[in-house]
Length: 252
Image (cartoon, rainbow, N blue to C red; front, side, top):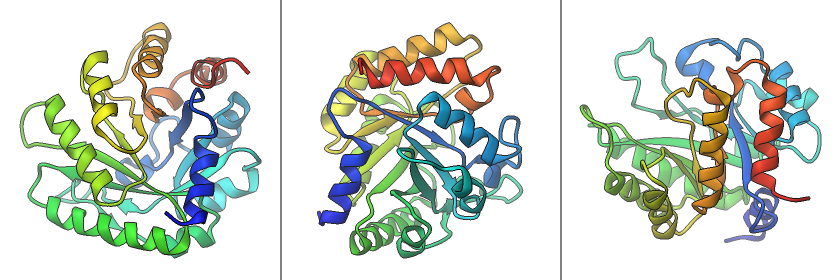
């Protein structure tokens, strides 16, 4: 790993006890301007005020977020896309290069691979291309690795396989869905040789249950969270996000 990637990874994970509080705000390409994501800049300001470490946006949304982004908040640029308007929403394609993301100020580049569908091979190829590009410009690569079988929920074994494959193909950080139990989550983190971030999964109705899930993620040894709708669609957002930051960051 080059010095650029190593330096940026230390910004993401400055100390072992501090978990990463990352929030993806890339949903509008796939889903449109959904509730909570009507405008990126005001949401970014609230999340920064709460203590979020990393905001992940599409390359076009950088123009909205950059004017309000302030240190020490980090910027992720997501370079995978599909829309629910098309016939193959789970087939993600690359929408830019690592060099382009670096020119926008990215601290990390994000791409998505959906495993278990006919187009998996094309996305694995794209992951390899992006891994090479990120290495060349010294920016870490985050892979959002999901199992999207035609029927049935993914098994813990399948999630472990997807995460290990993503890491072995060059991802420096992997985001995935929860494998179901704290024991399976510990096993996932132990078999994935790079930091593992957990997504939000199914919408949780009450704040107490959501916060309990965040505590379980911390206790199971994950490197942090990368949760979007389960967080930014809540009202009011600031108090809850502030408590999430406290759980992830630990004692100051």
